[in-house]
Structure formats: structure tokens, C-alpha cells
Length: 86
Image 1 (cartoon, rainbow, N blue to C red):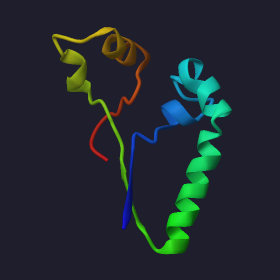
Image 2 (cartoon, helix red, strand yellow):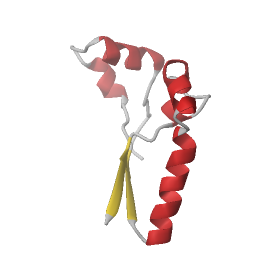
Image 3 (tube, rainbow, N blue to C red):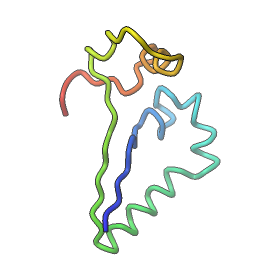
Image 4 (cartoon, rainbow, N blue to C red):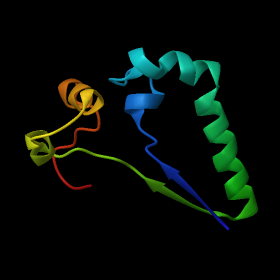
């Protein structure tokens, strides 16, 4: 048994994140961070493997020649931006 988590980003989960103004209310109302902590603690207690798949944008991603309104917003606020490989 394993748990796979995608896009656990400070951009979404922290009041300092660039998208907090868009998602912060929902994160707080759903107690998302506390629930993630409970999930990770339970996984550790049960000996489950946990895999986290982050989502990043690299400088070359900003050269896309297409994109919808969400992609344009993400690029303009620096969501997921990363200078280089992990």
C-alpha cells in the first residue's frame, strides 16, 4: 500500500504562497493542512510508502505559445516557478 500526493505546494498551502488569495479560504475551510498532516502521520504509523509529485515550471515553460486563462495567470504570478532541477 502506498499514498501518492500531487502538487503539495507552498503556493497553495501557505498564506505566503502566490495563490493564497485564490485558494486560501478553501484551504482554511477544509482544514487541508491539518488533514494532510493526519494523513501523513497515519501513513507513517501503518508503514505505508508516501510519494510526493511536485509540479514545477522552469524558465523554458514561460515560452509556451499557447495557454488558457489559468496557465496565463499561473505564469504571471510565478506559480510553481523554479530556477532549475531539484
